[in-house]
Length: 183
Image (cartoon, rainbow, N blue to C red; front, top):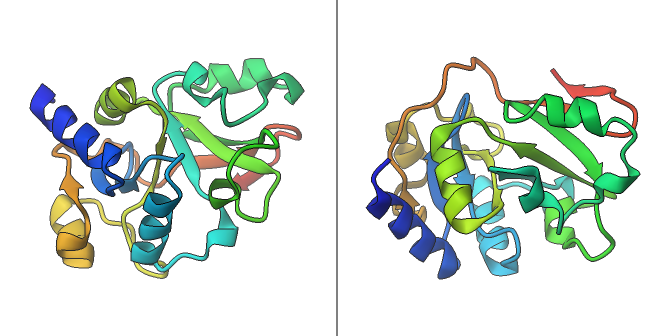
């Protein structure tokens, strides 16, 4: 991906904007996880209730350490063995992790992405909210064209690239029990 695409996305994220970008299986919507107003806008676009919580993607496990407490996880080797890749883990959140990310939960859904665009974005900006690019109740977008049909100019930046080869969004597992939450 061209560095000016990353630079443009970085500028939009720093200004509190919402971006659309390709992930392993679907197009994603993202914003700065520490920016409450940006997260509120993303949730408004998706028509998603805040209490459900969100996924945060990163390019390394270190980028997630300010949000979650890996020291409380008995299966850390299993988690790190599944990354980078399309496996999201529900990890105990730090007490100071914003509720606009965790929703009604004491955990935060996190993953280290293997998608080169997500990796490039996170290398430049750090961890990033990552949720499917669709209004709640609608099919996740797999093309930039579908994202534009859903959101038009309400998304501040469309990062180019192709969706990866996965046929469904990431698996979600509980980091404490290993239980499958979404297959």
